[in-house]
Image 1: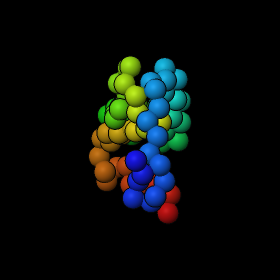
Image 2 (image 1 turned 180 degrees about the vertical axis):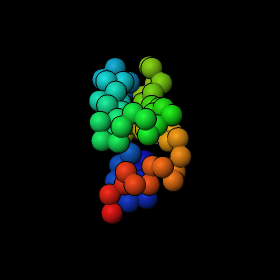
Image 3 (image 1 turned 135 degrees about the vertical axis):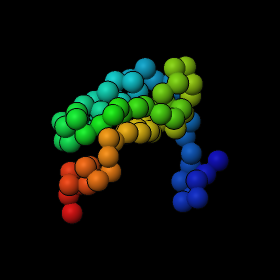
Image 4 (image 1 turned 90 degrees about the vertical axis):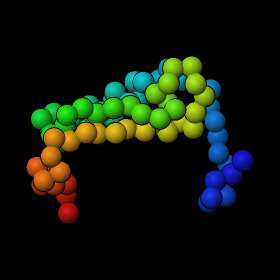
Length: 76
């Protein structure tokens, strides 16, 4: 199977390291933006499901307290 770009889609066996990789990425987001900027940051998608094979891409969904309050944290 290939993606729209013509590259093959790879489904990898579940990797317990995916949880750690998410936690590392979440820590970097907290460090860059401050914990107070977020309601929470969630690990979503197939890599978040223990035991499930997935494309090895860590999907992250940050919930911010306010888009207006978060806007100044985004560099131009």
